Every structure is written in C-alpha cells, then in structure tokens.
Length: 115
View (cartoon, rainbow, N blue to C red):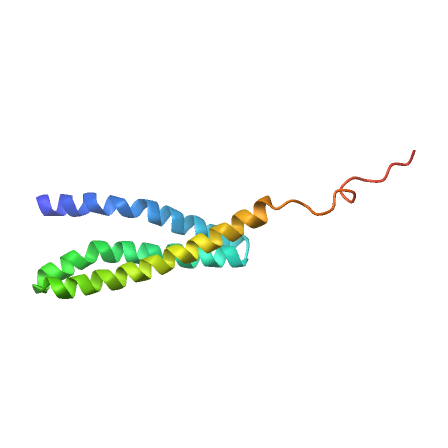
C-alpha cells in the first residue's frame, strides 16, 4: 500500500506537463501555424520524456540492470528531452515575436475624414 501511495504521489509531477501539452494542442486546433506545431511537438515529446524519467527506474529495478546501462538510458532520454525543449522554446519565441511585433503602417488604421 505504501509503494502505491508513493507511486501516485510521484505522478503528480506529470500534471504540469499535461497542462502545457493540452494548452499547446488547443492552440494548434485554433490556429494551424508553425509556432503551434513546434510548441505541440516540443511539449508532447517533453511529456513523453518526463514519463520515461518516471518509468525507467521501475523498469530497471525489475530487471536488475547495471548502473552503466542505466546511465546510457538516462543520457538518451536527456538528449531527447533537450531537443524537445529547444523545439518548444523556438516555437514560443516565434509566437512572442509575432505577437509583439509593431505594425508597419499607421496611416491605414484610421478611416479618412470627410471634413
């Protein structure tokens, strides 16, 4: 019973990546743009690597795998997670750039006066 409770409590760290992934999916469903795709891919792979960090210790404990092999798995997961974070960051930077860029033309924004 204690190990089940510990496992459930450790799964609470998955809540934030799930919210981020869900938000990115919602953004992608509303606007099919490059930044939405990059952020969704990045957050999806990030969620997957987060789950792998949770599952690898359980998997290695059940198979009695040596530490050298475990470190190889963590290195691969870390590299994949880094690429996912970079993908998400590039998408976020593009989104910020497109959101805050200044409009180029001011004189076309107001209607002409009839005076």
